[in-house]
Amino acid sequence: MTKRLEGKIAVITGAASGIGLASTERFIAEGAKVVAGDVQDAKGAALQTRFDGQLVYQNCDVTQEEAIKELLARASTEYGGLDILFNNAGAVGAIAPLEELDIAGFDATLALLLRSVICGMRHAVPFMLARGGGAIINTASVAAFSAGWAPFSYSVAKGAVLHATKLAAAELGRHAIRVNAVCPGLIATSIFGTAMGASREQADQMAAMVAMRAGSAQPLKGNAPEDIANAVLYLASDEARFVSGAHILVDGAMLTGPRHSWDPSDPGVMGRLFDLTAEQIAQMGRRP
Ligand SMILES: NC(=O)c1ccc[n+]([C@@H]2O[C@H](COP(=O)([O-])OP(=O)(O)OC[C@H]3O[C@@H](n4cnc5c(N)ncnc54)[C@H](O)[C@@H]3O)[C@@H](O)[C@H]2O)c1
Image (cartoon, rainbow, N blue to C red; front, top):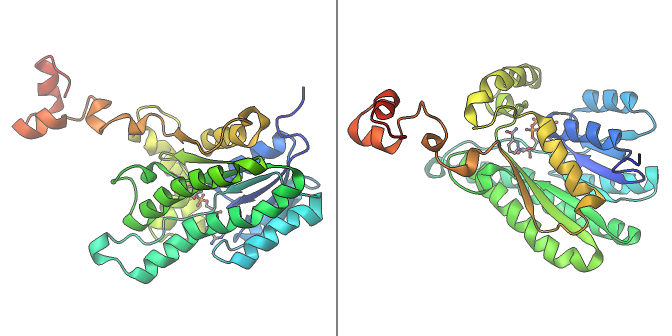
């Protein structure tokens, strides 16, 4: 059977960990050649050894435009072109609420999460034109849709990533370049540990703990990086040849409604209004 990305050449940012790593593994299993970018060089080198002949690692700080250009160019020099770009690298960034926000922290967060995506898309175009088209996937978030899922700066950046995805899809459609976004819910990765100021090593260990505890955060159990990688694979593949300007929400139904709409242990609006527990509400024969 033909593999889903056979003959394709992909660049993935943030490839050393979490969602980027799971996507890298999935892309390679489906026949792609991958240029993996990250700032975690030891993990990148290990990836290159593990996937010798199918992957090259290159240090790429996505806040640096030149580094992104060099990463994209590597796909050409190493494998002969560029078909797929997964703009995924990220971290939580500035965690202050608006009224306490340090604007320099805001700028840095947007440079990491938004400017990087714009640079990636911008500089991928000439390479994809040379191949007659391509597919770009940007990592947004549930935080792109409403308050309450991530800090202010992160949420602003992810909302803008989603909008930029649509704008780019409109502009680049005539060149047969598709642009889509994936919007993860709570996925068990190191991002939570790094957001709390843990070292990368500690954060990696905390990812396993998040995996165990995060089951109650969303209606569906699961939340593995592979769940996002599967959606990214679809958007990258020719199966999605008529899909552009779209996003796939992979959140275990988290955004379907407020917590009390799916969690019977939450007393909901009635409980809060009348100071009742979820059990009392249930005894009244009503859901919160
Ligand atoms: N885990 C979640 O719940 C979740 C939810 C929604 C969106 N996301 C998004 O998913 C993407 C991947 O995050 P993750 O959860 O896999 O976290 P992660 O920490 O496991 O992986 C992020 C990777 O990005 C790399 N990175 C960070 N800054 C970089 C920079 N300046 N240049 C290059 N690489 C850099 C890190 O080294 C790391 O390998 C991010 O864009 C994040 O915002 C994650």
